[in-house]
Image 1 (cartoon, rainbow, N blue to C red):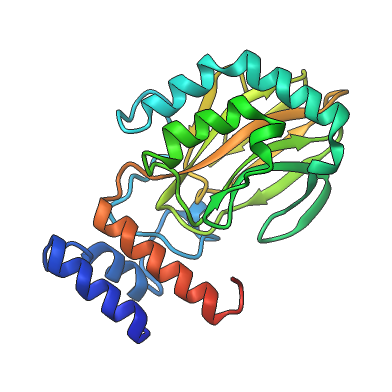
Image 2: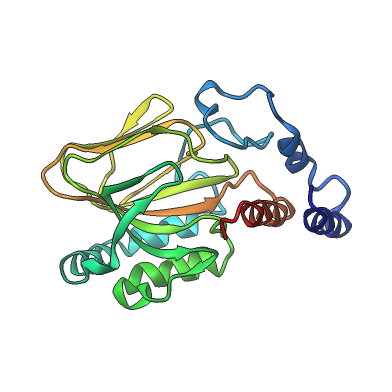
Length: 250
């Protein structure tokens, strides 16, 4: 650990107790510890996190207000996205996943780089407001990641992959879903139901596709996994931010 990480961890332990960061430290030292076969592509697996790939969106009290607010706002969210897609296409970019860049996977960001993308407040005001009030202000969002409209063009596919870690969890609001779309997580395939949310642990291998005739759009929100604690979240932000700094990635 760097002095910056050591000092931050020491301060967290002083406030929350000597054992408050045991799982984070175990994760950092885990080179070849056993993990689920379909999580082998993830960089970090923190012990004590549920090994459940799919989650009930209403199964975690901490996350229910986010789910309810997004689903309640769906009609306005969809209408504003349609206007943006039609009239403000320049606000969308090729999605830059940490593994690849795809031109047939378009993104409109609401939260990125540790803070809201203020330009989106005017472009998609309902989604931006819900995100701010129910995920950002309540610190449910994982500031190490992002929130964006994810639009897969017809014929697009996202290859099977694991995301970086298991201490955050991915929420999808199904905004506009044509026939012929689906997602597989840890070997189980589901489809989106427009206006409803899906919730899954994306440290498990997953893939998605659009075999329809028009774009498929979901609003993706990276939230803290509800199995993590507040001191762990504080430590993880310090840890990942410092690693990114050392790697020249922000």
